[in-house]
Amino acid sequence: MKATVLSLLCLAVASVSLVFAQAPVVRVMPEQLKWVPDPEGFGFSQAIVEGDPSKPGIYVVHVKFPPNVMSRPHFHDETRYGTVIKGTWYTGEGTTFAPDKTTALKAGSFMKHPAKTPHFDGAKGEEVIIQLVGMGPSKTTKVDSTKGLFAPLK
Picture 1 (cartoon, rainbow, N blue to C red):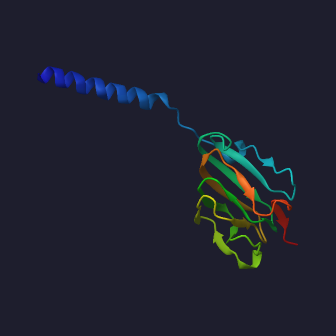
Picture 2 (picture 1 turned 90 degrees about the vertical axis):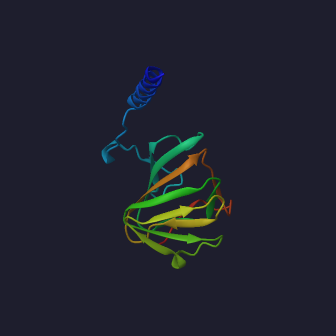
Picture 3 (picture 1 turned 135 degrees about the vertical axis):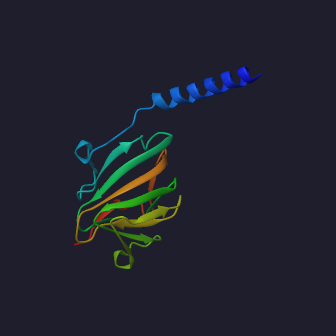
């Protein structure tokens, strides 16, 4: 009996070890990111770090706002988790674009965008880079479909 239990325990440990050994560690250096500019212009771009936002599953993207560019009110079908990597990210809630009523989040700050919550965000006087994590597929819906997603502040 003891031999059977010990054999099963050894088999379980070996199986778990094989599973862990099969998944390689993923490391992405900043210089490896492939920044893709937004077709609207204004200098906004994003880089996929892991996963694919257009497909089911977790994704991690970096988003870059140039100085004085913000997104207009929009929402996403999925909850997204944002961490500021560089600069000060200005964030606002609601369906009215009001850059002067935003909350400033400095590097290291975190924010959760609940699914379907209208918001707007971006940069004021400096470049901002944030990391967003969510579960795809991701979709962005503009509150006012007659306007572009991005707006220059000056």
